Image 1 (cartoon, rainbow, N blue to C red):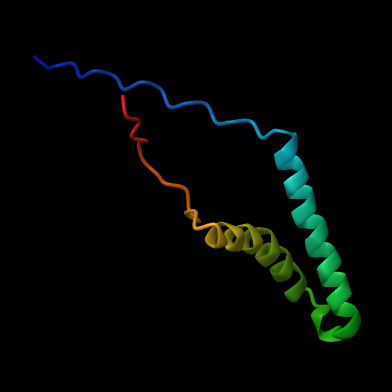
Image 2: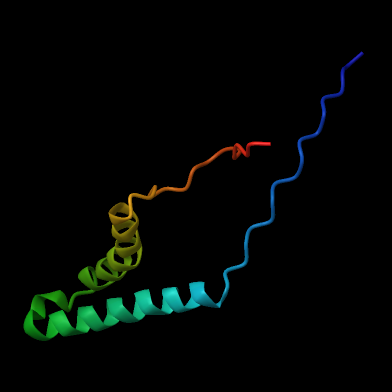
Length: 86
């Protein structure tokens, strides 16, 4: 006969981003656009179909990563079961 194994509890539901997260996203995208436009006024070679999207992705992903590094927080979230002391 086969033994039944206990079923692990379901994973917690992902948190719904609040209004603060939406403002952070807006700030990141708006600041990426403003800095790209401001720098491309002086450097016309920045107006490119490759550099523009690269700038956006690097700004939106890179800026929060640099802030986390400055705060000495992990850049990547930890995976696996979280160990909660009981």
